[in-house]
Length: 424
Image (cartoon, rainbow, N blue to C red):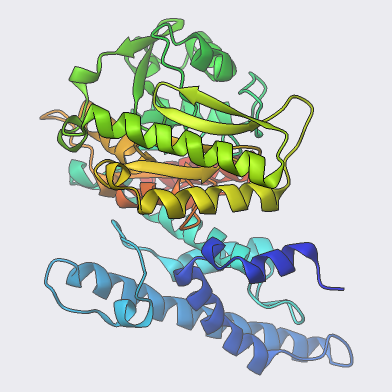
């Protein structure tokens, strides 16, 4: 029987990533041509087959690496690159991607070239892309040009730093890796959909208590490094900075982007009103045991206590919201995002591309120019529709993770690559 995951994945075109799917198709060719039976061959044949598969995979990824470089070089020339022709919806690349090296690293971990019955998968390619991105940013950290060095690492909250609906505890294995990044002089930003407008920052502190307490107690960090943690809440609506044992509220006039300052308050109000109406209508239509919650800069559909909404119900709600808001004139005059949070659905004013840009603007000085090519965003929601990390791709390099364990592994690799390159 076909697994539930495979059936759902096949039906949900909006959940796919065109670039990863294209890479998956390329790597399927050597898998088919060089696969052999899993029994009835000698150990020498097995070694030869594995070696040939590894060589072919690496060659393909090296060719794609060159295509990415060509695409990056063509972006400001008006020339249509080969990659753009083959993958029309391919996103932006702010750095080079050493895909061949990343493949060799992940092949050792995931035994991709040794597999005979399971072809390189979506997850294999996703992780290879993550490793390539981290490898490039890590090795560039000691570049002679300070502008090329990684300066800002941002994170989603739920499923990225901690499990969905939970908080960051002091025993989180991610915290030591973040402390090492702070020690290296990097800024850390948490760009979360959670929208708490109270200037006290108490609710954000409650979600991040483990991280805040560990940073404050760390003897490895000086006061300046400890203050390099920022929280951008409600996608791009509420900015806080760590100061001592609390989160200090930053007045919007100190960070608001020009494009955000032109939004008409009436359009924002009408968009939230319309979003609330859509959610209320869907709640009744689908018979959902849920509540419609209105906040200052967002509106959401949240399950009643003790109830869990089905994934298909959440998908129906978020896709309907996205479709109807696209046709709603006031929503077209501002920036918003409708996303499936895993257990609920929210419509927020702003999005994570703006949230990351706000941090870049706020942190940039004459001495420290924070731009997309020296920013890394780590998140779990990168589907084109119904996912709120997707638009962060417009503001910086990204790593697409599936759980907090992968986040820890990515940060561990990043610290290792930075440290190893410093000794070369």
